Image (cartoon, rainbow, N blue to C red; front, side, top):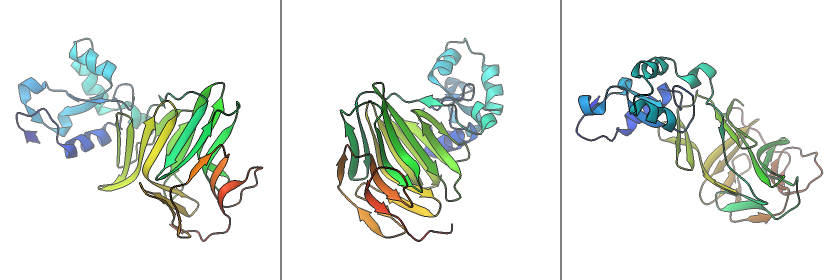
Amino acid sequence: MTTNSSRNIPLPIQREVRKRCGFGCVICGLPLYEYEHMEEWAKVKRHLATEITLLCDKHHKEKTNGLLPKKVVVEANKDPFNLRKGVTKPYNLYYSGDTAKITLGSSSFSLERVKDKTQLVPLLIDNIPIIGVILLDGHYLLNLILFDEYNNLILHIKNNQLVLTTELFDIQLIGKTLTIREAKRKIFIVLEFKTPNEIVISRGTFLLNGVKIIINSNQILIKNTGHIIENIQVINSNLGITIGKNPGAFNSIIALDNINRYNF
């Protein structure tokens, strides 16, 4: 517990509250939320994790205006929406236009004014699109999957709809930036949604079937082989980096077929 005159909630308490509430509004599950002192801050002047919950903007305003009874919030806090589901409520991202850009570290992959139904897959592992974009009917549809070392799906963006597992150590969606931590001071991915037509991954670890790829602001490292990819700009090519067999019809910019796999 922290007692002081500041309304700023200490970061460790914020993290505890996020995890306990399933990284979303306890009533509706929306992963865009605000911190709410269930006991009125003006009265208690303290930050106690068990007295703080998460509410989306709509439910927060209803609580503040007295339209949402405190009792309802307290009960929802005991049984948060997302923890009942095991995943966060789907959140729709807004992408559109006839161009698309994916930035991984210092490299970028883009589609520029191409015909309808064109696909871009910057990263393909064992014929599974880890990151992909489809331009369809004037819309930019983003698809992205993130696995842990045991091939458990922890993040899924399907046609611009974002879903996250609540089993993660920590998730923060602040403004346009999503940060996932697998442990304290251990970042799994930092992803910026630069609407309407770009995503930027400045840090990230992609894992699948014993393949490990590490991204930082300067490079893409294929950990299995030691390959380092820096400062490449790929335009209007359907495939970027492929690892494992690629039986498709398109050629990739960088292809690694037979590599040693980690046994996590």
